[in-house]
Length: 294
Image (tube, rainbow, N blue to C red; front, side, top):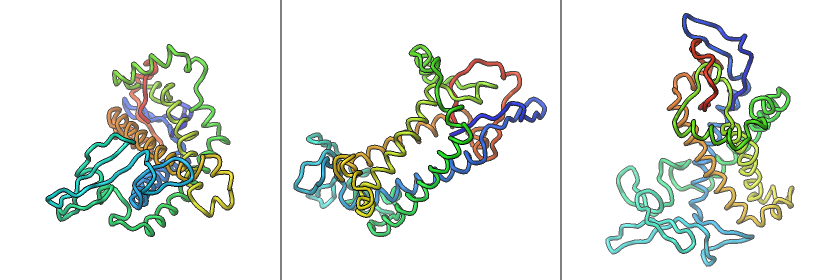
């Protein structure tokens, strides 16, 4: 999440130019969001282990057919065999999901590895406390980002694609740049390309609000305050399934985001999100636009 500031703010040191790229509010909300999302994902996995299956509608139980399930079975050697099931399709996942080892190398029937959950041991009560803490911090931080983005013009100026950028030819050309790992140089590195804008708008405008609303739908307290949420998502189990899907979309976005940061130059990219300054080589300031990683 970035915003572009005037090039006049640049300061030059020999052959390097450092331009002001990320505003203070953008940097703070970015890192708070990162901490919240990791806390939410890890505590959410611990909560999910209480019943690692997904349904659609108002209710779901062991007797109902699950759309998705993580489970395990014991073999003759008393070693559990992990699996995931999509409807009638079953895949063995021993050692990754369903049946995992602990720090001593012993096998356990457990949906997720110990290192992936918060807390490590299976503890629904403590996991819910961690989840609610990060959830409310996440909602407040996201609201602050939206408020800043609207009042400062960041969302409209930096993330809203122009008509020219939404043309099929422009989107196809941008996709080719990404596939060829052609990263921007100079002035082009200070701006988002069409696919980046669509990805960021999709995450902050659709996926993150969906995570928040479906999470509220699963809370009996929130249902009492906003009873229309249950009807909006077709039931609490439907909301739980959508919550899980949205969380996985966030994971996918994070993986792609981190990969692009590494390929584009992690030191420069991370420094720009900490100090707000991005290094640009002056002889490259007139290169054409191509994909950026931030």
